[in-house]
Amino acid sequence: MPLPFDLEEIEQLIDMAIREDVGGGDVTTDSLVPEWLEARADFVVKEAGVVAGLVVAEQVYRKLNKKVSFECEVNDGAKLLPGRVIATVSGPARSILFGERVALNFLQRLSGIATLTAKYVEKIKDHKAKIYDTRKTTPGWRTLEKYAVKMGGGMNHRMGLYDQILIKDNHLKALEAGQALSKGVRLAREKAPQWMLIEVEAKTLEEVEEALAARPDIIMLDNMSIGNICRALEIINSARLEKAPIIEVSGGVTLENVEEIAEAGPDWISVGALTHSAKALDIALDVRGMI
Image (tube, rainbow, N blue to C red; front, side, top):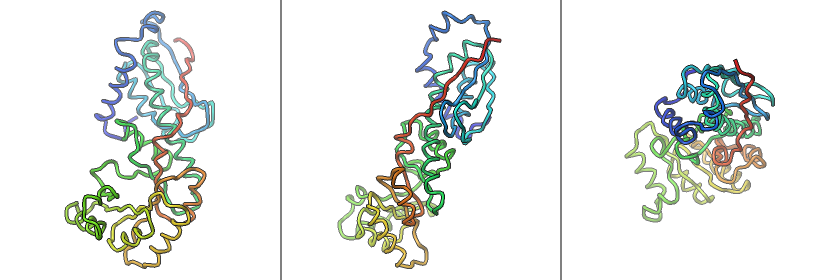
């Protein structure tokens, strides 16, 4: 199965994970399992969820031993019930056991993110808003974790500081008071590539009005109450701009309030919890037998 992201970047992460876990060798497996022995084992989901990371687990075994066969039974993004076999590995028993925890760490973490994302997406399926991730990712895992968000039906916000402008309060402190936001947008338009989106953060209704005057591409309503989100959208809609900005809501979004936020009518809802608080999906490697 081809990797849907930069191979070199992911291989470095896999190499690090193998060195971290296997090191100079699996002393337990080396002591108990003969070199010549071959086995077959299944990766099985133990709870309902959305699978992600099969492509990475396969690459783990390719790194360890090309004689191990990795056969996917489902595709990343599949919604599964407990007991479903998602992949089968066969070949040298030692290599299968060497890779067990490394492969599971990737599968469980990424499937947990995909599963949590799918819950948010399901909550707002009857509204126009889309669920977006953030940069609150595990260091080194950003590409993979944002991939898992997509497998759960979510959308990716900017990948890093280099591919979209997002003007926050700390940036504005570097500019003189008064027209800081307008000046910030103007400077961004002068210096950034034409294709790059410019987003500004607004924490109050006064800042929403200031943001509207600055004409950014996106206005983020940050940590606002539901009432203020509704009032902010009324202010924006009543402005009747020729090119209305995209409206994003961020901060304090949970599974309990996301539908109410979506009912207010924003375009995007960004959720840091997708990547910083997702629970790992319970997946196990069950050895079926020796061959």
